[in-house]
Amino acid sequence: MAESSSSSPSEEIVRLIKRLSSYVAFKMSSLFSTPIRNLDSRSIGAIAGLAIAVIFTWRAIRTQPGETQRRRPKRRLQSPESSSAAPDEDNGVQDVVDQFFHPGKPTLGQIVRQRLSEGRKVTCRLLGVILEESSPEELQVKQATVRSSVMEVLLEITKSCDLYLMERVVDDESEAKVLQALETAGIFTSGGLVKDKVLFCSTEVGRTSFVRQLEPDWHIDTNPEITTQLARFIKFQLHVSAAKPERTVPNVFTSQSIEQFFGCP
Image (tube, rainbow, N blue to C red; front, top):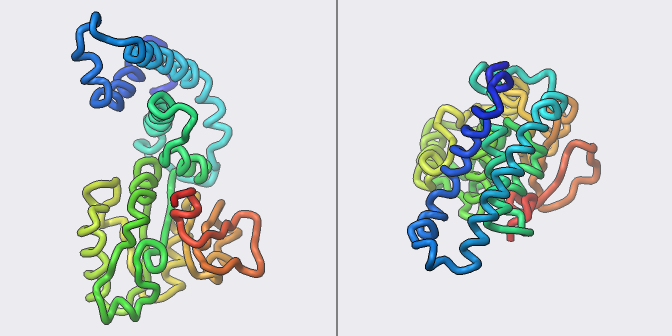
């Protein structure tokens, strides 16, 4: 949509300041509640730093639209809502806020966006990546369990990407167990994921078909055959495996877990 590009500079700076304020309000509330005469040099420096952050963000927003348009994949179809510049502006503001409060140290959110090359859609299988269980047969004999170590990364992905989870199951009971495990872990309440974006199929071919239809920027899987088949259709893939495969292609990365891929301990 061209609406955001036609806005006047004054309108854009007002919108930017409002977005920035929403991110830092809860962190700065105690600082601003203190009388000016009682503020120490560190607090005054924090206020000055915030002002500088707003200025640099404004300058960055003014120079980004052309670059973003050149990097956008041509084959990806977008709805009118998703074509808005708002998500990109949110990420830009978040990066400035992160740098302000954690100078010199990238946050997990920044690392996730950088490693995903600013990808906007991600598909990911559940077994062996999000869940402790590694096969559909295991889901038949016990309850599904979400790996606690993956939650932080998963929630960061949902903040900047359209995430779809998928899995092959052998019965309806297994499907119900997976949804219950995800709900218990708080993925549907804490992140941007909804149940409609958790997809199930009865064959591995079905999962491959899901990925092809969704056309993500990234796909995460444990099956080397699927990653090989999708390599020429999907821009990037992450193959989660304890052992490094003998053959690799340039757009397929390998890691023991998605936490390790994003540098989490």
